[in-house]
Length: 269
Image (cartoon, rainbow, N blue to C red; front, side, top):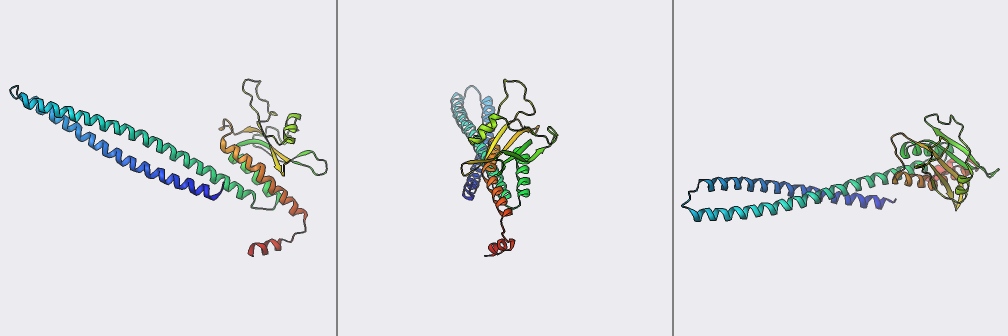
């Protein structure tokens, strides 16, 4: 997700755009040539109609010229169809590159937002905003392992539709086992009984140094979303790694005797 990848994709997008523009100019030239030949064919047909029967040799010459022009017109038409298909391919590639660049930018901005503060409340709020507005999860909860009890406890939640009214269900045995193993789980209910409000759609462990220290559990997506996209998976992976590091750092900072002026001096150095 480095800056180099973003620049390379931008250069590719510009190159595809240039090819697309050249292709469009060539297509316009083919169309003009095609129109010119069409008028010439009409003119020759009219001349042939005006020639008397006693000018047989002229008629044959005209017919040969007409056949040649028709063959040339078919060749140009074939080139036009080829360029039309090529331009469609370039346009599709350009669209894909634009979307990829947008995804890279979203991931970069999300990563910067997560690490923009050492306040745990702000980091949690940022995680909730990313999960709600960028992933499109309407109902979800954030869990962290309590250092004293060693069990997962809910530390933040978002319930836009009031599905649980703040009373989120405890994690069941299957999710607990998957989280302990660091396994990401996406649940599908197709062909089964109708999904219940307490049935999760996804359970993403928050990992650090190979250990699960938290989880994001998603129960419902926004009404306009039909499922998780590739960008959603990348954003959730980002939260599973970057966000947990930021949270642990914020907690360590809150428990330390670090003087904020030390951070200001470090930033000026």
